Amino acid sequence: MSPIPVIGSVAGTAAAMSRKAVQVPVIAIDGPSASGKGTVAQLVAKALKFNYLDSGALYRIVAFAAQKAGISWQDEAALASLASALEISFDDGEIYLHNNKGGDDNVSEEVRSEALGKGASEVAVHQDVRRALLDMQLKFRREPGLVADGRDMGSVVFPDAQTKIFLTASSDVRAERRYKQLINKGNNVNLRAVLADIEARDARDMQRTSAPLVQVPDAKLLDTSGMSIDEAVAQVLQWFHQNK
Image 1 (cartoon, rainbow, N blue to C red):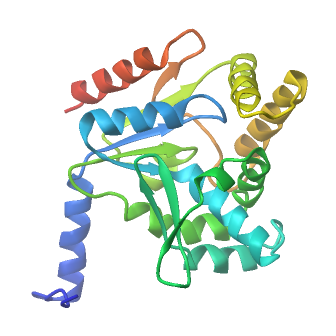
Image 2: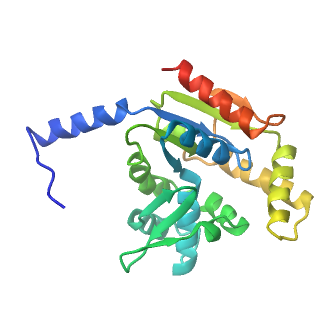
């Protein structure tokens, strides 16, 4: 690959690149676990032909890679070092992790397990891990636009996002959705236990000191408790077009 020519000062070039990135529209969709934000975000990105960032998957991959390397989910320094070296990409709903052989491994099934959902919530409380993943997330902001879902997309990662959504649903509805997903995958689970896990994750996400889950003042609230996926997608697209 040819080197990128530098015109003018390095500082001037960096500033120009930063301004260009800011001009790229971002739809930031935040919300709690099992609220449906990932499905909605992917469909919105597809409708607009925008890039897509599943920030939650990044933390799942950190938990997954740590597990493979024998690193504790409580070892902040080791997790941050690991996170800074990861190369991750998304393609058509699939998640890929670059390996040391020069290829990419499809890790979608592994990282979407319930165990790694819990692991993601645990590693995400570490400020150094979040800092290590910040630059990676910012690089997903490319033309023609980006739809990013997570828990701090509108508050921390893309505070200048053109459209901010806080997508949620009642804990009972979210537990029922997650329960049905797990049953359909052949898991033997109890609805009450799923609800308890949902509520525990909510508490961790909202109470952590670094980038807690919060609805920022300029985010529109979208409660999907009584909505279909298509209705939720249509509402997000409507708000985005209104903000143009």
